[in-house]
Image 1 (cartoon, rainbow, N blue to C red):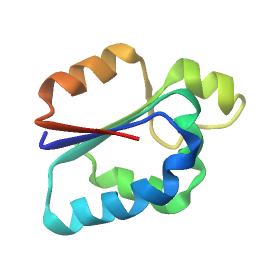
Image 2 (image 1 turned 135 degrees about the vertical axis):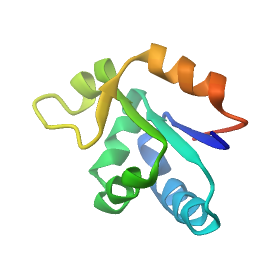
Image 3 (image 1 turned 60 degrees about the vertical axis):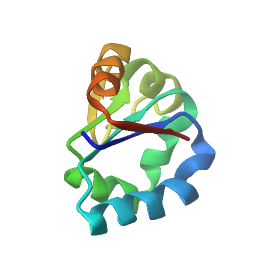
Image 4 (image 1 turned 90 degrees about the vertical axis):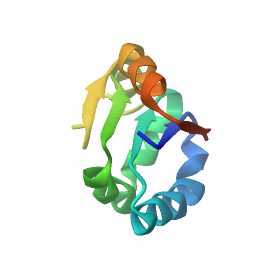
Amino acid sequence: MDLMYVVTSSQSASILLPMLQASQRRGVNWGCFFTDDGVEVLRDTDICALMSDAQSAFACELSWDRFESGKRCPISLGSQTNNSAMLGKAKHVISL
């Protein structure tokens, strides 16, 4: 994976969306991991739509239960183990 986005803040949506769109336009192989209140970014339907282009996309299951309890997660739920595995494969990491 060329680029991994680690989304840790609910305030990241306005930054993440144009970065994902640029990655898509450039044909970059990318992935996302959402954790802490960063899982709230998945409320944005435009961001969720772009997740289908990700090589890997996970939301931390514990964070999802904490901040979005009772709602269906639009991407796969995972753990910090998934985060670590993705980080190990990423050439570059952007943490938001």
